[in-house]
Image (cartoon, rainbow, N blue to C red; front, top):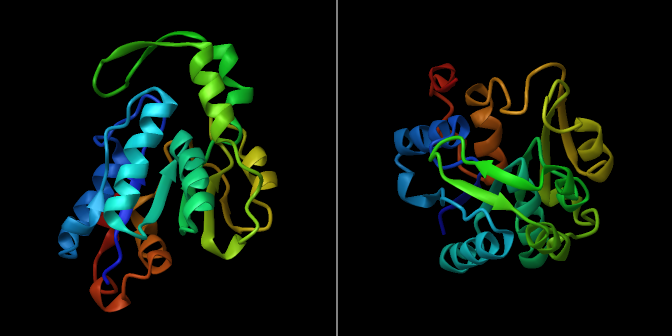
Length: 203
């Protein structure tokens, strides 16, 4: 069975984000566009996780790629279903931080406005899982100049996993396109499909 990938965007992001767009372009170039899902997630964690559970059921055993809050969701799903997960500047225990952000929010891409409430925070707390034990299923990409999250939180939480820590960068993760071969190798997509591709065009 061919590898499928489920990309999980972060808070106030969308399938139109830079990383999601570049991943879609690369998968299409490899002829694997049908094996990628990039859902537009609801802002409420309970509805977002329901969307993701439905896609996991549809795809069977997808490889999860989660960015920021999407990395938190990916960890929850990976632990529940025994899936592989590649996490990019993932949020760790976001329910411990979100109370500082209660109030009006705006999606960066859709311009949708919504209210972050204590119910959102409680829903995130319900999804929290301990640090992974089956660490071979995880790869974690961090950039130290992440302006939104302290990379050291993820470094500690995922310390037993395969960590890739890069100096500098930002929360959006600079140089994502050039790292797509690492993503495809982790996902088990055979190198014959991508080894001759110039990935610099996806940065």
